[in-house]
Each structure stands twice: as structure tokens, then as C-alpha cells.
Length: 120
Image 1 (cartoon, rainbow, N blue to C red):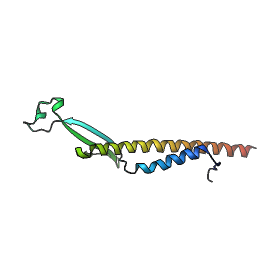
Image 2 (cartoon, rainbow, N blue to C red; image 1 turned 180 degrees about the horizontal axis):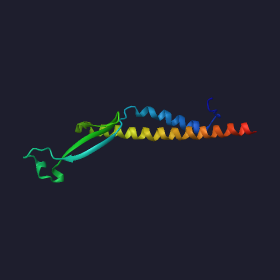
Image 3 (cartoon, helix red, strand yellow; image 1 turned 60 degrees about the vertical axis):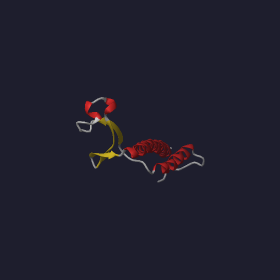
Image 4 (cartoon, one colour; image 1 turned 180 degrees about the vertical axis):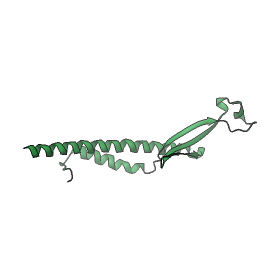
């Protein structure tokens, strides 16, 4: 049985706004964006001395896929885009959690309402 809705129900309106905002997240990427600095291994490179300002920047995307951690190298020219896409996924997770909280509150209220009718 579907949960009944009252016209102008603020929770349903909020949930609708949240669901509609999901369409802006279609380019999201899961995982963590990692930026690290490291030596390249070439003995004559500026990074060989190990000084932090001489190290090369490396961009990575770490993703848990099918139970295994996978790491993807991200070229510098795509780093800003990949970082934004990972942030979109975090936003998606926040929106999904908010939608689920609304749905749970509605289910609990519906259950309590039905129990009250059965007792009466």
C-alpha cells in the first residue's frame, strides 16, 4: 500500500526538490580524488633531492570496485574536472541520505497511524 500524501505535504515537496536536483549530478564519479607528490626515479631530475617543492604532482582516483580497490592515474589536464566529479558523488550521497530520512519518517508515521486505527 502506498503511503498517503496530503496536498501541500512539505516533506513530499522537499523530497521532490531533492530528487529533481539529482539530475545535475549525472557526471559524478565514485571514489576518492588523491593528489600526491613523489619522486620520478630519474637520478638527474630536480625531484631526486627529495625536497617537497621539487617533487612531481600526481593525481589519482581511488575506487572500490567489486570489492577491490582500484587506482586510476588522472592526467594533470583532467585533474580539476575529476575532482569536481568526485565532489558531485559526495553531493549525491548527501541527497540520497536526505531522501531516505524523509522516506523513513513517512513510513514510521504511516505505521503509527495504521496501528492507531487497528487499536481503535
